[in-house]
Amino acid sequence: MRKSTLVMLIAVGLLASVAHAADKKKEAAKPAKAPATASSLEPKAVDLLKASSATLAAAKSMSFTAVVSYENPSLLGPPLVYTTKTDVLMQRPDKVRAITSGDGPASEFYLDGKTMTAFEPASNLAATAKAPATIDAALAAAYKDAAIYFPWTDVVVADPWKDVAEGLKLAFYIGQSEIVGGTKTDMVAYANDLVFVQAWIDADDKLPRRLRAVYANDPSRLRHEMELSNWKLDVAVPDGAFASKQAASAKPIPFARPDPVAPAGIKPPPSTAPSKSAPSKKN
Image 1 (cartoon, rainbow, N blue to C red):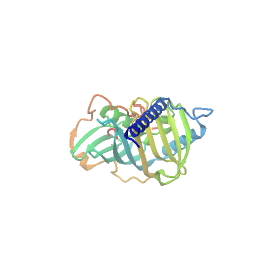
Image 2: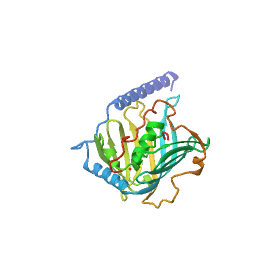
Image 3: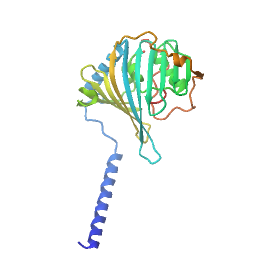
Image 4: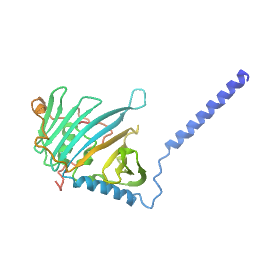
């Protein structure tokens, strides 16, 4: 084959690739269509979300592990992924312990019913403030006053379904998976004006095993994913579980926001008002 013919074939191939990429870009730019259903809220999807929420709300205490992966933009364009792991212990109506490690300094958070403390072991710094009377109100105050936020907030609030149902505009059933969490799960997608979520819910115990979120106000469509494991409901809680001697003796700092602007692209906790039924930062 002559060189000119080879060059021509390469040029034709490149033009075809460019045209194909342009078509793909046009397709990607089209708004995604919701599944063809009689309603935007499929009863099966809503029932699964309600069942999962009811299971969580019924637990007087619980422990679980949350592994959170979230994307941040890089200077080169493609996002970088950061991961944290948090071991959570909760006791209703007013106690939480969260021990976090990951791609950054380890941190600890204690809510003992009277005070809430954020502690960074490496720097031996601790910030403490008076806590509201419930888990819901305390986590909302921690976010408002000190920019402390946990992606698993909706798991430990008094009424998880209330938070899901607020502004809910789309919910549909996807199917089953036997990959996530080593168990059979039902996959559900749901959305409001702020966020689109895909959830994997254990088919037997109705506990959430994975949540994947994309925020509507994020032009980069960065993904936030949380794996939930090591579930124990109504677990016995030992005395002193919601306090730390090391945190109590650390150098005190103000319980305040590190900057005046909330981090972009995260979903704040529910309401700052205490729940009628009584329940660090960005991960």
